[in-house]
Length: 188
Image (cartoon, rainbow, N blue to C red; front, side):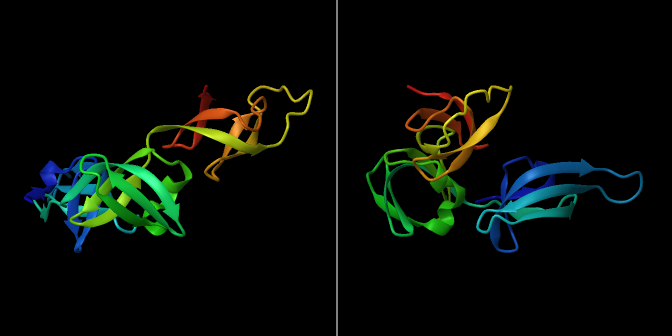
């Protein structure tokens, strides 16, 4: 991979910092009246998820992080590990629950996810942006609870808990935005 200097910092650019891959979450170029210009950034470690506010001097260079993504189909879970298949070459890989993090709340068998690699190492799984999941449990609506924007908790087939409107009942299929964990609409 090549190098990237602070003038090329953009959101989602990936760099090697302190020997690990980081993604730039925010970047502000600052040119004070006196002194050297600098970049005020917020970076996120792609291995640990740790977020840092960091200031870099203008002109500093970094190695680009060799991070690639592959579309993979979720097959099944065995204990704490998840198994995926590359949709291009049908190779199967095993991903630990620690790497799965939040993604495990939103995927069901056969879902196609974006799997991120740093070299050969899996560093993250991104579920589809929108998923259709079945409600396995929610409190029944009580007659008279019709106030605007009133919500209740619902448990989905993956174990995720979300807020839903009062008219939602168990066994309904819902469309969920996995970026926010919010209910969007009923699905058919």
